[in-house]
Image (tube, rainbow, N blue to C red):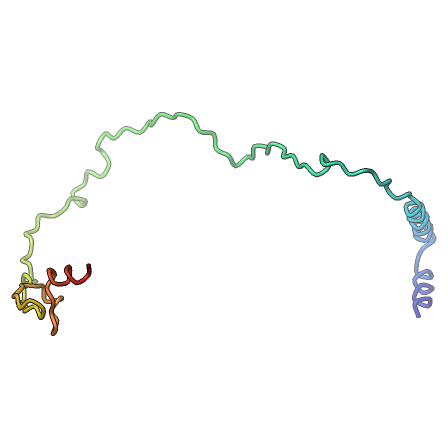
Length: 133
């Protein structure tokens, strides 16, 4: 089957294309005849790597001292629209937190604590410190 395909391809080629094909096949045969590289003794220096210095890329920015040439003369944004209006502050709507009295279960001392720390079985800080030791 492949022979039929090759014969059909050869019929479709022009004489110039056939000559080019033959020349390329001859060159491939010559390249195959090249002798393999000679084996040589391995030396430790063969395994060392060296790095070349990287070439400076065009994306690097040169750093140099510059002078700021801008001077503010106050002419920009001088209009009345950009001023903060005078407004009286509003009254605070939140009431200050009322502390809650709790009785310690360990020493029966009464302690004022923030409502967040209110517990059914409350233990004061003094008793908690003595427990952790």
